[in-house]
Length: 305
Image 1 (cartoon, one colour):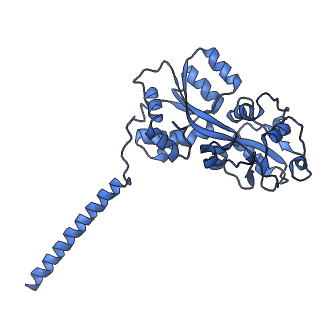
Image 2 (tube, helix red, strand yellow; image 1 turned 180 degrees about the horizontal axis):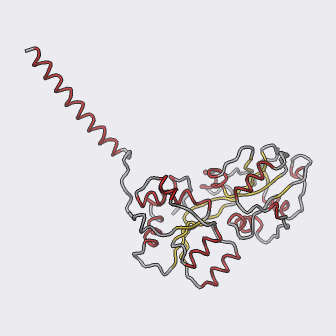
Image 3 (tube, rainbow, N blue to C red; image 1 turned 90 degrees about the horizontal axis):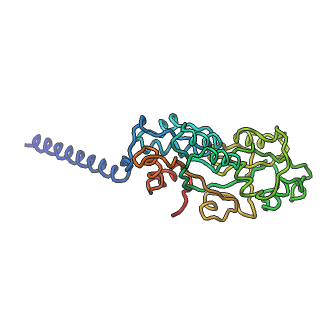
């Protein structure tokens, strides 16, 4: 009799454990540990050719991972871009079907217009032009006017803006780069920056950040980038991101609009894309709530509305 009770007790215990395990698995699924597929599903083979700006690469990988139902690592391995000016060129010549891209430089805009290809350009997110100096530099805040005066050559020494007695070495980017376009649009506007020698115009955004970090270890250098790239994609020790007009760039100040040098980036397709084409379907999905969630997962700030 005693053995029967022991056997019965063991059976009951096993049933409880089984039910508990099933309940936990069910709860895990409801809690999102096994996320449901998003509303748009494309195979890797039918996924449109995507191009864009370097700073948008993590978003491109996240979008592909979500829509193709693959891992983020696979999305990263399958994603590449040709940088801002070439991306705009590629959407007009048919080498790309969709862009996640920063605003084009005026020269690039003219080439796009000359191509005669109609584009649908929709803002999807917000980023900021940020200014960077060496962490050894005591200057942590510059006004927009001070920055303009530095880049037009009116201010040439850090002691004119509260720093040490040392010459300012202002870096720029190439004329057609995305960050240079923002620099001209958001800060310089009608002002013409002084000509920079080639060694102060790195071809790659990462090269500019490297130069700022190591410039003779004196802290003389000043340069600029976009917030997402400098904060999340290419961090370097020994650098300081400057406040502009008293406001530090951050996710919060970009989202609430209090940081002054803000601009949007875009999803772009050709206007001729059919309603059921993968490129148009993907563009439409990016503009949905699911698309905005994917952007946020990758660390980006979607436009509101």
